[in-house]
Amino acid sequence: MIWTLGLTWAIAVAQTPQQAQPAKPQTPVQQAQQDDTYQVGTLKAPPPRVQDPSIPPVVKLPGEDAAPKSPLVNLTADDAARVALKLNPSLGTGVGAIQQARGIATQQQSVLGPQVTIGTGYDKIQGLANYPSGPLQGPYLAPLVGVSEVEAFNAAIQYRQLIYDFNHTLNEVRQDKILAKAAESNLTVQQQNLVVAVKAAFYTYANTERLVGVNMENEANRERQLDLANARFKVGIGLPIDVVNAESSKVQAIVALNSARQSAEQARVNLLNQIGVNPLTPILVGESITEAPLSMKEPKALLERAVRSRPEVMAARLNVSAYSYGVQAARTLNLPSIYVSGAAGIEGQNFPPRESIGALSIGIQWPIEDSGQRSGAIEEANGQLTVAKANLESTLLNVQNDVANAYLALHTSEQNVILAGQEVANAQEGVRIAEGRYTAGLGPFQDVLTAQGLFVGALTDQTNAQNSVDQARVQLKHAIGLIL
Image 1 (cartoon, one colour):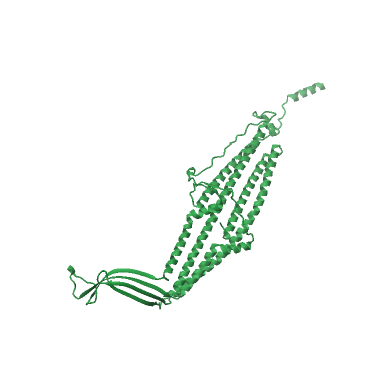
Image 2: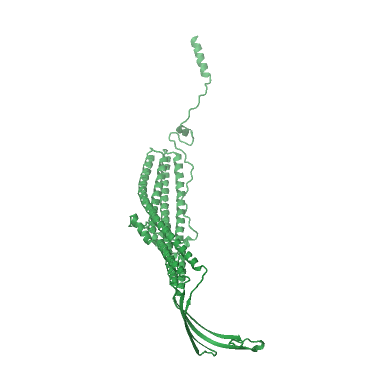
């Protein structure tokens, strides 16, 4: 009886539906095995859906291929600057200022030399009450009553010379001549500023070309890493996400390369604009694209050289000297001036005239009352001198500031070049280790992407650091007045 009941209970229990148990979460491998597209046991996944772009062609300006066939070949920074000094039209303003200043000085100096005038003419003089004059004729050419006339032909040469005016005119001439020299120094300032701009544009262009090379190398490395991810995926030991990430990093590298090419083309156009030639002109940078270092290292020597050589300082000093003469000229404005003059010629009532005439005279001009003209001129001249002295002091400070800043920038950038070289070595080693670990299945693909990103950044830092050295050397040479 007991056995029968037990068997019945067992059968009842077996026939009663059991309560559903919650499903346990599946592992990625179990999920992959349930997918019909995976082969159970081998875990071979389908290829991921990705876009695989290629590197686009370089964008060029329209008509660049048809540009003049005289490219600037093997160009250095100094070569570019020399060409700019010949072709850049901006220097025309400085040349014109020199011409104007020289013309003013020549006009002023002419007052010190002899003034010679030659002339000839025919006089018909008329007057009333029997005084010699030309005829006053009525209608039908009938002479009027009481009118006489004199007709005469003449030719004469006249000479006039300033003898003495208390150096008033001489001081004005000195002022204008020195201002002309200051204009020459200002042209030198323009030339040096142009050289700095051209060399800065040259090294910027050279740096952008180097960055194009960095990005091309980065794209090649991203392509190689994509091949590595694909190879691991095809043999069933890599993840699809690795392929997708590798493809995305390759696309980013292509975009960066395209941007670097655009920056290089814009830098090339800017360089040609600074030189003063057509932006379609072909250009080829030479292999030597590094600014030569300076032999002088001590800041004191650099400051002394700058004060002696900078054309801005020369121009400021010349202005002070010129306006000093202007003050002296203003103080003698209303003092007497002595002149000597003479004339010789012929005249007569018949042509050609046969009567010889001559005259010699010495004269003094002395303005007694000028209603404040002299005092106003002195005040104006003193104001010009005050401004010139202030400009000289400001120029000296600016020059010294230029030297100090350029010196600091150069030495800092030289240190950065050393650090950037170490950064590149470390980042390159990081790429090697990350790729080795990923190939051996010991590390994730993200480590490869991170290491490659650091490597690209290091190469970019190294290129920019070298460009900073070149730019700082140019600035320091400009600061001390040494360009070419």
